[in-house]
Length: 24
Image (cartoon, rainbow, N blue to C red; front, side, top):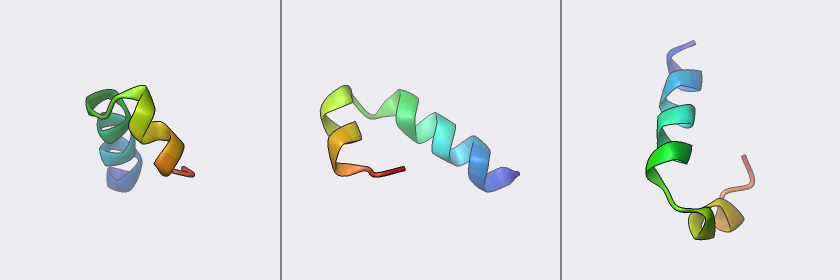
């Protein structure tokens, strides 16, 4: 559960460009 929250926060903090490098 904690991992999910971190992942969501990371996605919001990181720009769409970083999303390409992140397969998650």
